[in-house]
Image 1: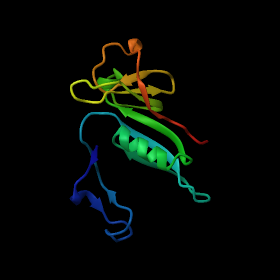
Image 2: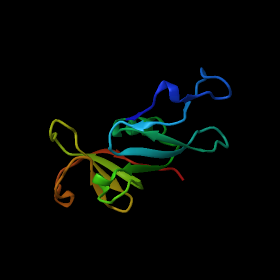
Image 3: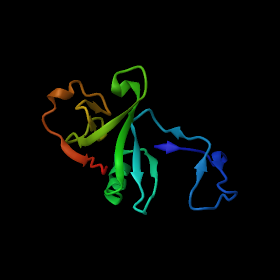
Length: 142
């Protein structure tokens, strides 16, 4: 989840009580994947916007509500998930769910556009996974 504090809120056009809130900074609740989505409001000549979403469930809900507006979905992964020394932002193709749970947690498998797969919990060999249920197929509109 993405968090912030009330003291980080910035006044937008001099008003803090508008529909849009802005912050000087935000925190990640945990070192887990989150999603960066390029999307365009359906209004005529609307510029592309970016929204940051903290969980697969929130991404799925947003995708269902804005399916015709999504231009690209990226997953942002920490080093312990992507196997590098740095956070990475990569185009996402789909999210699957392992049947059952591991340590009382749902395990998500993230498939990138280039075919690479990541799991959000320790799974020894992703190539040997036989059964996953598709949670979300990313559809983009160019």
